[in-house]
Length: 348
Image 1 (cartoon, rainbow, N blue to C red):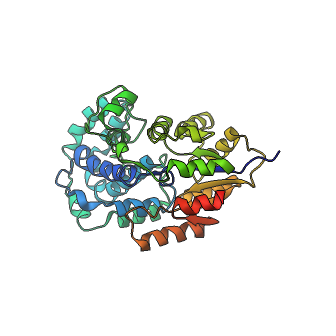
Image 2 (cartoon, rainbow, N blue to C red):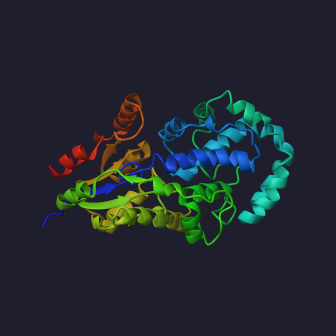
Image 3 (spheres, rainbow, N blue to C red):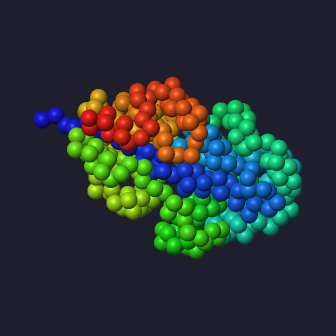
């Protein structure tokens, strides 16, 4: 008996509208890190926009929003901060090696009080962030976390073990209650309601149910498992998917092999295919994503790449058309703008 086609979804931007959560949290993480950790307190908060975040993310190689935040901060620090504060760069590197959030901040903050932040404040008032990022990325091709970064970018380890950028991101995204539940620590930087609560489901549950009649449905996402399951349970759609592959699966395999397996690497899609029971049937497997890295990962996995550009966001028609063209140019065989069209294609 022939199996139904397998349709694998990315979550962010495809199932879940994250324009008011992940994208905004990346923006706020850059702002709060420069203001509260580096000490550029006079920095105006409008120096970076959601349009900057979207434009940088669409360049590829930064599918994970933590990496996106690291890369933007790294570019800003290298452009406006590193050269004039080299005298304490070595001491900051030593602080970063302490491997504990409390210890890192206790050591780094007194050092950073002596840094000159006028370059950041002045520079960001005259240069758009996306231009700074593109200039930096042209010099080093792409941001890889293991590559040399600014000594003032405290992103080693994880939350609780010295990754201050990721801690800020997680505190803002999760909010006080969920952050404490997951990490068993009080937040340092943000104690309000988390931006995860601002997310909304893009399709109706009924749309997914209809898709599930003629297809097997699964998910391959860059979210940590706890955050993926939280969203699926919050929107009451967790029962509609056969398998869910998350960031945790990728990290586990990276630690085992020592390689880097984030998109555009096909590992997440490959694992999802395996968990869904479709290892030998790839010609009827589809992956729906909203970023160039999703298309690249699909092609490398040998499945059909489908693009999705949500027409319900605040982006202009011009921006959405450009986004769709970018996905087509990278190899998407179809690009859908809403679930009416997508359901008609897969279930019609």
